[in-house]
Image (cartoon, rainbow, N blue to C red):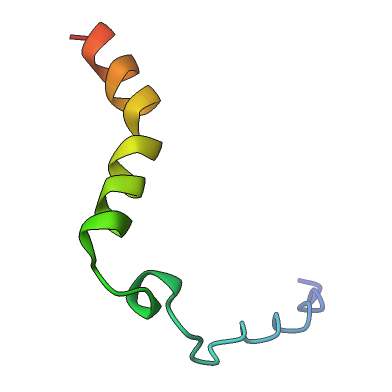
Amino acid sequence: MIDKPTPPAAPEPDRTPRENSILAEPATVEACRRDYDAGADVRALLAKQR
């Protein structure tokens, strides 16, 4: 039997901790309202699929 060469191992992914953009912004009423308004199209699409 012929030994097949094995490919080199893939490099490790970068697991450097990064700042979380969600946690960086305070949870204010205004920020929650923006998020809610931004998801209106998604909620409408989901309502159609029921």
